Image: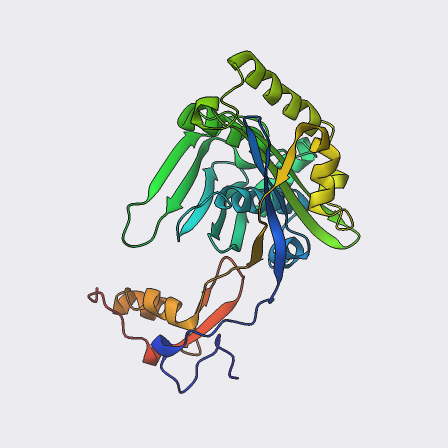
Length: 326
């Protein structure tokens, strides 16, 4: 099969083939659960080898890679609550060394993301602060969460100022201020002997009057929530990132005395949705002068997918722009 990143005799707008990226799926990537007769539900995300496949597409500093891995796991976990065909995305934009952090996941588990960093600014930051937490990497800016429910429905977007030292704390601040939802986020990402791994544990407190544990009074509901938080506090990053520790076993260790009930697991997969046809459509919206400016000495235009970091080359003579010249 011809390489879809290179020009060929077949018209660009007909080339929808998947580019040469890893074909990886994690069948039990998201494991939803709830605690019976208690106002607590959650989702455990374990990316496994998918994390390494996604994160190693870019040659980032480990501090940036950890942040990107946390964003991927978090986005997968939040997308796991979708009840419609569409996607959920996280975007952080600030004035720090990482100027853009983006991850999105479809309701079917197709996951992708990237972090854009300024290497020189990052080096200066890490020389002063070797830890490089999310707040330092992102700087001042905003965090946006977007639900895209498809072309027939309006998109829903919540935006909040970056607040907190970690991505988990920033997300908790968003839920507290924008969604009025009590939630606890635990994120982990690191390079292990098996490669990069990333995980997320999301807990949500559901109102008793919503049908979960309605027989418990408010004090009992709050106590159940505090107990769940205390148990999650015993988790280590090593446990979250251990491929040899299945998700159901990890949750059983935490909540077996609290009425743990597991729901149907959901898959995750390598989900970059770029194609030659899609990028050709982007090029077609540029004017002729812009296209001439993009062309290299050999007459080719190169477009790089920021998610999978693949270069797509187009013959300038074959690209017909839609904008006016000048």
